[in-house]
Length: 559
Image (tube, rainbow, N blue to C red; front, side, top):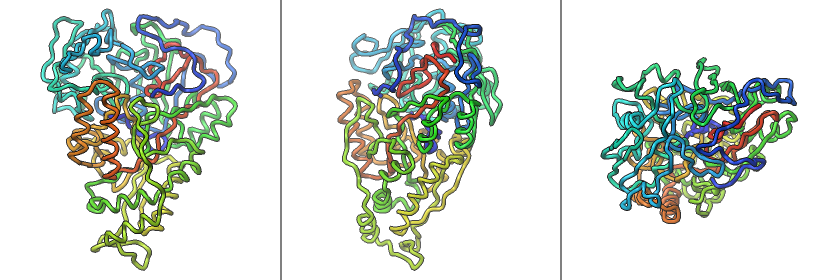
């Protein structure tokens, strides 16, 4: 599954690597190590008068509809879940998996994955407690797997979980998954923190319910992260406190306040005045302004988010491949990046980031208005007196969906509008609040229900490079995240082939072939790989984000 920026509602409405972020130095806390229990009372010398000792205030334009990552995928929710929820595996500063509730990451080398790849054994950590003090054991993992595969639950997707044929629980700290076939994307799909993946749920709180869709738990979850939920003021903020039961020890921060601020200009003001301490995944159009601030530190590096324009391929207009290809030729991506994003972003056609070991460089489609016009001419699209093309009574005009509160994205779309107008295409921009844009299928979300002709946002690709959830024929919402409504059996065959190969070297050429097929079909337009920009209070210490999960290593963080 993908993490959307809400999945980036980030730079452009993000839905939820190997490159290290500059300025970091410390290693991630490993299992068995305990962070310093500084907490309140530890003397800190603040540089900024607005700093509140041991309280971190984070601001994001993305609002949320649930605190349960089984039911929603907003980027803000995934960040909150990394801080609070229960996962078998987290990710370290080198973007590699680190055991959390599992004691070791399964592999064929350590024999926890069978030689035929169809059996995965999880050994679970003993002495772990949920944030309400109840004990954690294998019952919770077995129960949570059943929750994902329960058709009554409004899960975002079940890709991978639907391969589980049987679960054995030989003891309270061992769980064995039996699969229909090998599944190389088991990490991070099976209860890992990277990507829009479900967390492990507490059986003692939810085990008697027929489904989790309306459970009170969704408003104040109990997890096993370093922090726990205190309250959620809808539309305004979520408050967290240090989890006294966290098995690795008490974090240095006492409190985290996660604020929902619906406009990037307001976010900029609040990071400048010190009303918030961190702006994660800054809109790249604001990079020059946050970089100039004296009270903050700003870092950036290529991440795992890819920014894209999605066609609704179920729309009759976009059944016509030459239309999709012509619109791709008529986007000056280099100009968009340089003019609005200050040159930040890696221009490429495929979604797999250069920060990933699965990356393959692929040829780029150039900006070519003449080629775009020639494609439309050959396909029978005639220019009308008003400058817009038509074919058999259908005008080359369509709605373009954007998340509200993103002026830099609005500027990019206006540049796109101007070049598309030159080839005879017209767009009508419609803005939606993030809560509606990224709501679930069952709640009428714009993306998942396909209430758009074209849309601009970003997905965060997970470390395994699996594109199935967004590109396989079986993954149309509500069964997955293929909002493109794209379907090609050739692509499906390649993605299925990649999922049965466990080694990165074996998967890389298969994924490259899948990317080439998707590019040839043009169901979407990848604009660029987003560079992750984080701006934070210069009084913040100990924070070392990786390229995948920036909030997976928070024990040593303080302010």
